[in-house]
Amino acid sequence: MNCYITGGTIRRLREARHLTQAQLAGLLNVSDKTVSKWETGRGLPDISLLEPLAKALGISVPELLSGEQIINANRSANLLRSSLYVCPICGNILHASGAAAISCCGVTLPPLEAEEPDEMHRVQVDTNSDGEYYFVIPHEMSKDHYISFIAYQTPDRFELRKLYPEGPCEARFFPRGGGMLYWYCNRHGLFRQKL
Image (cartoon, rainbow, N blue to C red; front, side, top):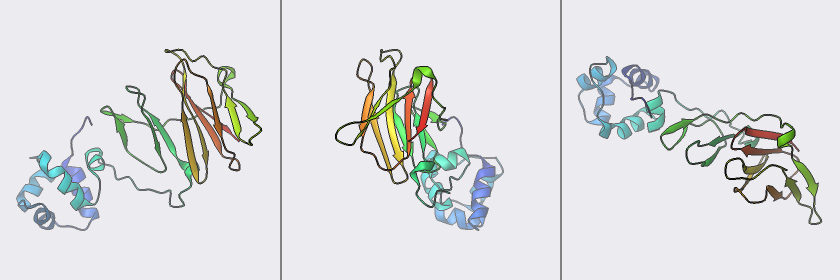
């Protein structure tokens, strides 16, 4: 995180919970003058108070630091509304089934925006004798330019096959009635195709 909590954030979150400064201070074992100093920008909460402060305000520590409360509007648990994230430093692949504040290696990650594939990133879809989808991407798989993963997403499942440089660029998934196929090129980003 490259920011620290602001007084305006503390005040906004405190008021949203219908707490007075004295009530919040009592939950944290500090004085109401201390809370007032935080909210007016004349002081900052000690780092040891961040977790108890976040708990008292009903949010997570990352939400407290970013000043934004993440509200999961994905009430129906439809995985087709998911987001994918890839860390540019370590290559970690993260999947969230709703709104999330995701960070890895000290970097806050934006959700990837999937594009329609170009000629270099087209997927060949086949069904094998076992009734599985068989996906092949005729893409180079060198150490510098490769497809990192292929994922198959339906309303109730998310399956991911991790791929590696110098390995085959293919994946097999059992058909589950449509859905969306995603794949990620380390140079060109995320692509998608409706099944």
